[in-house]
Each structure stands twice: as C-alpha cells, then as structure tokens.
Image 1: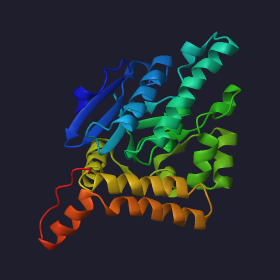
Image 2: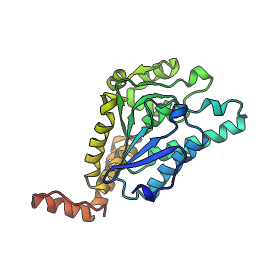
Image 3: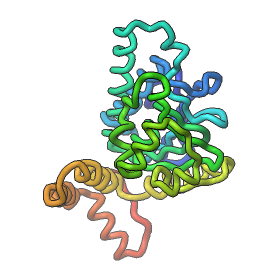
Length: 267
C-alpha cells in the first residue's frame, strides 16, 4: 500500500497491518517541528487519502523519536520571516489542517511525546487520540505574541468545553496526559512502550469493519455536530441510505447468517 503514495521529505509511512497506514512525523532532530516542507507534505498526504485511499481504511498519526510528538511550528525557520512570508507559510498549514479534518479515512493520533501549539492542534484535528503517560500538551501561542491558528480555538472547546479551553489557551500553561484524559482530549493513556500497540489494535478493529460504513458514519458525526439536531438526523439518514445498495451491506448480512467473518471490499 505505501508504495502507492508519494515519497515525503518530512513524513515516514508504514503499513503494520492490512489496510492500516501509519503516518509518522519524521523530523526528530528538530522536535518534529513543522517547517514549510512538513506543511506541504501533510497537505499532500491528507489530500491523497481523500482523493484515493489506496487501500487504507484507518490511519495512525504519530511521530519518530521519543519525548516529542510535535513542538509546533519551526520557530527557527520563522525567525526573520517577513509578514508576507509568514502568512504564506501559514496558508499552507491551514490547508493541511483542513485536509486532515476532512479526510474520509479515520485518523487516530498517537501522541508518543509532548504536543505543543500546532502539534497539539494536529492531535485535536484527528478523529480521536491516545497519548503516552509522559506526554504533555499545550497551546502556547499567546506567550509568543500570536494565537492558535490551526483550529485550536475551535476544536479544543468542542473537546473540553469553552471554560476549560479558555483557561488552557489564555494561560498557555502545559498540562499532563492524565489531565488530558480527564478533560476529554485523549481517549486513553498508555505507557510509551505500549502506546503504538494500543493504537494499532484499535486501527485494526476499525480496518476490519465495512470501510464505506465507517466513512459514512464518520462523515455523519463530523458534519452533524456542526448543525442542529434535526438537520443532523436528516444528514444521518442520507448517509445511511447510501449504504443500502452496497455489496458490503449484502456481505455483512450474509456473513452474519452464515456465521462467518465478513469479507468487506469497500464496494
């Protein structure tokens, strides 16, 4: 599967199990900070998955090295940037984050280390997240004269509530993995040595389900949460009805009655 994707300068791709794609931030010598090239690479991978999943049914989004998942934007690269250059770079980041949020394939973030600023925003833009018990999280932008600009002011309140989000964003204070779990940022916390295996087990479970059903359910939740309940319910039925005529729906019911494991083909 991974040979069907482009090669990236700042990302490493792996296929640890059938239909499971690992997208790994790969700038460990720079705390996996996002430079302009990483922004381009992230935009490319999430766009590629949207255009053609190439067999991927679930993505694990993690990072190379230990201690740091992503420190945010590469401030060394940004040092001395003109206003125009800064905004041009940020436009790439914006498009990459939107592409991640709109990716039809489920994305599980596995924060194997600290996730600060844009790194934390990538975690928030994923469908859900697991974290290493030693990881810390923060949106530190207000301490640098800017503010979260890659979804942080929108995705964090939706995860933890408005009052908690205001405290996190306006203070810029880091918090630990246990707090992230209690507040709803993380779905689970694991020892760092066990984190990837836990994420992989979940990814394999998702990848074993009917891929069209998974995508439609994800789409229904994602867009339904942005509207009122009645409109969301109507969107859900539209998504549901698109599955009735699929081969996978026929296979799912047939395999249940034949008491065997289904063979879903995404058709």
